[in-house]
Length: 163
View 1 (tube, helix red, strand yellow):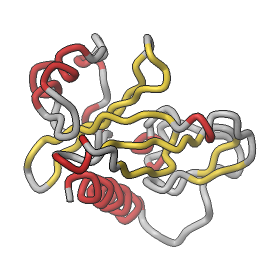
View 2: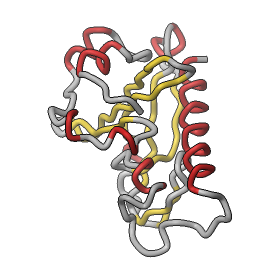
View 3: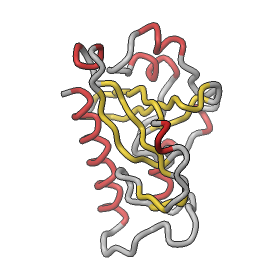
């Protein structure tokens, strides 16, 4: 993923108002992020831990999603699998819910997916971050195929939110 500026990030959101995008807490260390290893940029709001954000390039356009953690999933300590990168964690997967874009979202429609709680899927897939023993299911896919699967899963989630 190409490095993004705070302005690009704030203007990318498709499922929240401009005011909400303006008020969100964007990380200040954007220059230090490993952009070459990221298939998407995700982060949790340190001042509101139930809020998370996901920014990705979808069909050549940078798009962002505002997410909320489901309270029901926060207590789980069993082993769960991220639906984006297929990494398993003990207590490290959260149900993240995105309001749908447009009128549907304003009426309360949303889409959820189980994702790595720290949104570091790209780093887990590449082996740059370790989720512990047994976190990677043995697969015959190449690294490139795993990366492509993650990108495809993220794009499919965005498509559900923007449909």
